[in-house]
Amino acid sequence: MTSSTPGLTDGASPLSSPAASTDASSAATAPAAHRPTARAGRAGRTGPAVPRGHRAHVPLAPRRSVPLTLLTGLVLLYTLLPLAWLVFNATKTQTGLQDSFGLWFADDFNLWDNIRRTLSYDDGVFLRWLLNTLLYVVLGAGGSTVLAVLGGYALAKFDFPGRRAVFAVVIGAVAVPGTALAVPTFLMFSEMGLTNTPWAVIVPSLISPFGLYLMWVFAAEAVPAELLEAARIDGSGEVRTFFRIVMPLLMPGTVTVLLFSMVATWNNYFLPLIMLKDPDWYPLTLGLNAWNAQAQTAGGEAVFDLIITGSLLTIVPIVVAFLLLQRYWQSGLAAGSVKE
Image (cartoon, rainbow, N blue to C red; front, side, top):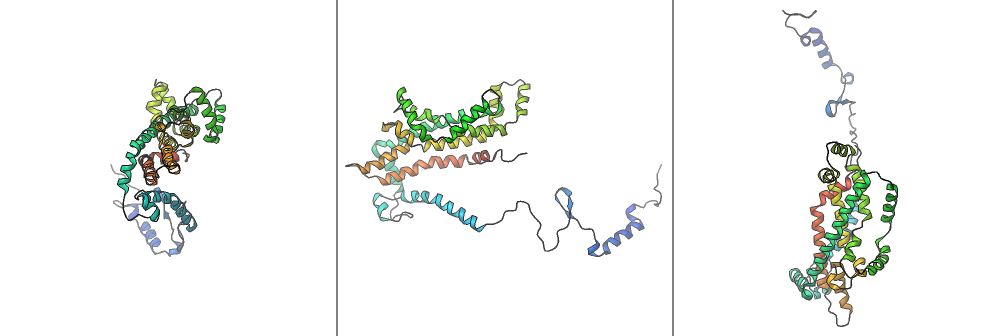
């Protein structure tokens, strides 16, 4: 059986009807002012046509700013100038430091000999200071990161009495500078007999109010409460949930806190200065300062070329760490900035 459409002959279609042809030809010959205009948008959407001679508005389109570009260039120059000075002068001898321009190389390139002398000077004490610094960073900064992750996750996802009081204490601790606590810490450690030992530097480094606050904020946004509830319904314990589910989500924030703690411990100068007397436990910051001070003592040898070379070697691990962990650091800082 076949069916036919009223008003259409067999084998004809609506598009081939005379009326449809007449409408199509009329639209094609109509003046441009009377034609329907439409602008194709994303995902098939249409909108009003953009008048000729006008640019389409692009939301959040970047615009060049000459004053901002100049300001950024000045900040970049201010940041890189000390590093360039350090690199140039690490290639010079003791005499070349005084006879040449500070922001360019001298006639003789002495970098490799300076490195060799730095590592072997005073029975290789520089390597001992480097190992001490690595010890303080691994135990101090590493332990500080672990405590910040655990504490931040607990404060963000568990409700308990006194939570608001803990928040007030953490915010207050962030506002207190570390130098204000140095003398009370020294008196307390002196009573405990821990001064002039590595623990006098490691234990205070374990406390990082800023790292705890940062992980608190990050965990509140990065770990959905529904995911934790689903894990508990499936029978997963709190410890297993933390290591199998929570830790991968907290990895960007963890690396961010680790970088901040590592830099703070690596560059720590005032705390070891008041806690340590034995040069065998000096970090690099205190050791290089001791080399600089010996030039001012009677009969002391000036080793400014070794001090500059040692300073260059000191910043290399920090630069390498930032380059390797940069993507985690950037994602950690941006997390939570956009609300979905």
